[in-house]
Length: 111
Image 1 (cartoon, rainbow, N blue to C red):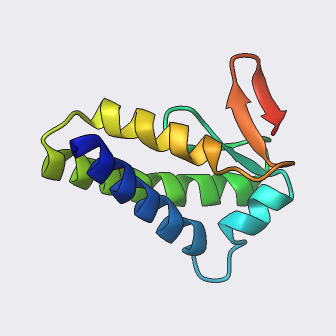
Image 2: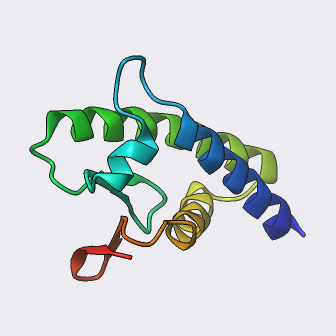
């Protein structure tokens, strides 16, 4: 039962963070569509090209918010941060649109 609640909570967090971005900056969905960022199995966003300053700034901002949300979920559910991060990564990769990037064992690849 806790996994069901945890899955729902992680889903809500990922949805909210998908629409939130720093004022005047590129949106997360736009950055994904342009191939600047992608989802990682650890529940965090990664810059496909770390040399791109816009992608790096967005990645840092989103990951800070995700970390805080994951910590809150873990605390509420009395589970480990690692478990929440792993579940979030699994859900984020599952929900990644075709053509957007995900990180696999060999590096970045289009889904």
